[in-house]
Length: 331
Image 1 (cartoon, rainbow, N blue to C red):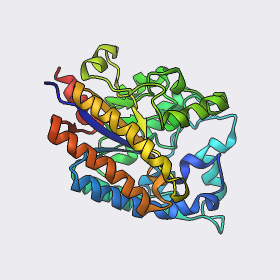
Image 2 (image 1 turned 90 degrees about the vertical axis):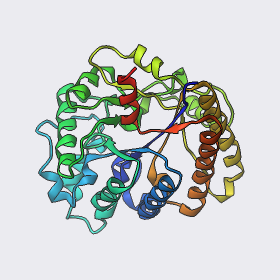
Image 3 (image 1 turned 90 degrees about the horizontal axis):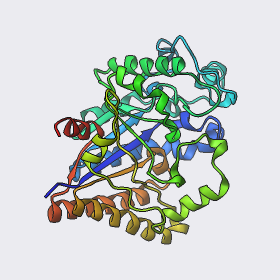
Image 4 (image 1 turned 135 degrees about the vertical axis):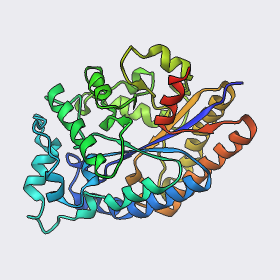
């Protein structure tokens, strides 16, 4: 019987993913709690022997803005929405604003902790939280960004093998660039019109609402798939697409009654993958746990306990994205 696979990927980005959404102080509670959340996640992953892929923005590797500037790419993205540009933001705020906080932007110590924790992979979330479907980046700018991510990861003796596109804006035009940079897999989107990759402005409100309902009840399917499916759909000399199955979303205490429905949705899909010998790919942002860390870690632990049950009952295994790629290579 084929083994089911449980894989986790985390979009580790701190404030870089929120530049166009809110001011840093509006997101401060989440950011301040993120280090504790990361440490607690690592504790659980080690306890339950869960392999996880930490897709990290390259800027997080730096100690501060000055250290980061040494790795800036020669070609910067030229977004029409200037708020998306991390370099413009850095030049304007770093060391010039009383509100600037290095802990909101850089995390070398946390990355060191992830690196030495069993079963963990540090992967790429691009260097600058690069948006591939916003107006108007280019393949040349993306290639320069990925090279900057590779270069700064090398300073910690880390080889990037997997990537998650920021805001899930994966772009087929850029896949060959990943392969050239040594990246063997990326996280694509669920195979449904509901999750089709798009720029932020092109996601209609009704689709956002349906996604919220899909987290509670099965509107779009389990989104599990086999290793052979991945291999069959991959063009020669391209990285493997390891699509998301479900985003882990938990609510605060006032909305905690929704968590049982979300857990049930996730656990049913995990069990389906375990029985069918398929992959279930769960993802989230570590920053999402920064507010109400204890409660959200308890929710995560309930999911990991379910994985442990499936491991015992169906021999389900936990693998990082890089480990899955290696298995596909051997098919």
